[in-house]
Image (cartoon, rainbow, N blue to C red):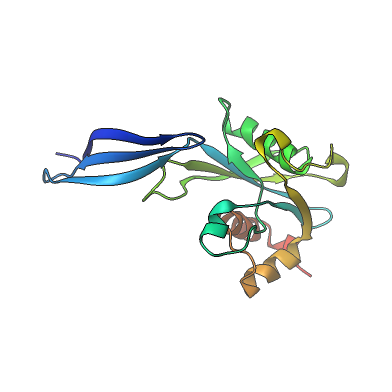
Amino acid sequence: MPAQIGGVRVVHDGWARFLVAEVIQPDGTRISREVEDHGRAVAVLPYDPERRVATLVSQLRAPLLYAGGPDSIIEIPAGLLEDEAPEEGARREVTEETGLRLGPLDLVASAWSMPGLSTERMDLFLATYAAADRLGAGGGLANEGEAVTVHEIPLAELAAMVTRGALADMKTLVLLFALQIRRPDLFAA
């Protein structure tokens, strides 16, 4: 028999839901596992191939503080889907957070971000923009408690940040590596 869920108990239902699932393993053994459930997400590395820069963001991250880290890190724009296609959600998140209008979206992967804990599946995109695509300042949505700082960083500097260990966000690293593989010419000093 394949593994299956025997039952679920909701322990918190807010921005994310936290569950305790009873899992019946193939041999019939029952175990409990905690599950964080908040739905699908998107993340985008917006880059300008002409100026060889990318736009990233930083904002307060309570989990980092709780874990003894900094209060924010440099990362790519990302967010949860709101009853929309991943491509629409990606464009919405980037506009809200950075003020940019994106060119074509290039799907790199649809991946589970933390399969041992979370139901989150994230669609990861690369997308071009140009200097003329700035629609506003960005900064996120005040009614969602967002205070996003926008950073336009040369691609060569982002590569150097990886080498120094100065980028610590997994989704940002994945998409930066994907861009380096697909367009190594953009990273030349």
